[in-house]
Length: 323
Image (cartoon, rainbow, N blue to C red; front, side, top):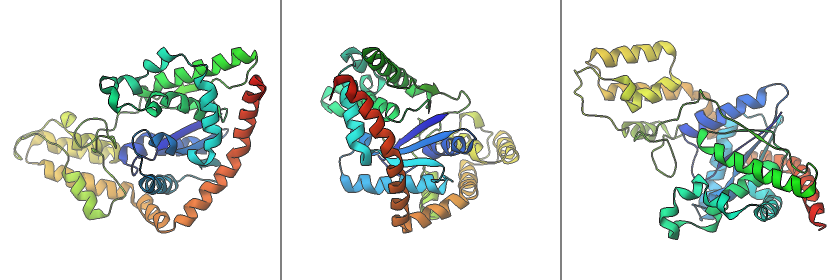
């Protein structure tokens, strides 16, 4: 099966990105019979971030995170969206011309911000079309996404179907969304979904002192140290149980319920668990960030490998319009 996953370069990779997208994608890429396309969606980043130097820096850190988390570039297609921009944006235009306005106006990515139209740029409005181009350009069959992205994959299927009907043959593979019901939303330090835009994330690749400072900012209630606490309502506990062993989680749960265990103790335990869980990844991340030419070489190799696939797809679409 051909699987495709992308991550925006709107910021450095955080715990939510790693647990929710990067590690699952790396595991999928290792399964026999899977062919994985893993890319950095730096064109999409422009809807919210316009500074080129920052985008390049973020792209480097995102790529380093993929590599640090075990991505094998010899057995996957690893590339930057922007380096294939001619194909992505050309397909964006063709798809835009078969996509009805109401479909885009109903997209969550637009509706969530439509109460402040002055803040909505055309790139944000057409975001689902570029996302569809990202998928259809490489004949992707399976798209692992969260529940909040299900609508966009349905839109991609509609666009692909419209082109196939126009051509009266299968120009595009119709992709399927793969949504794991077992993947929980990763909470940020304020309890909302961890997000770069909300600035509520934990950057597991920070130096140790900076990482601890970030963890200490996790919001807690005012329950005194000596009193029992409800672990199910606490952000620190929710994060801890994502990366600690079952035995460690059971111990922390018991500590919460019996009292005499403060949130400061829990945050220190979370910090130590992160250092253990990501020990190898943190070392590899620092190595790649110190050797950006190695990252560039791996990305360029991937971009050379995906280019013929993108060219073949664009040629099929051009023939519909006799270009």
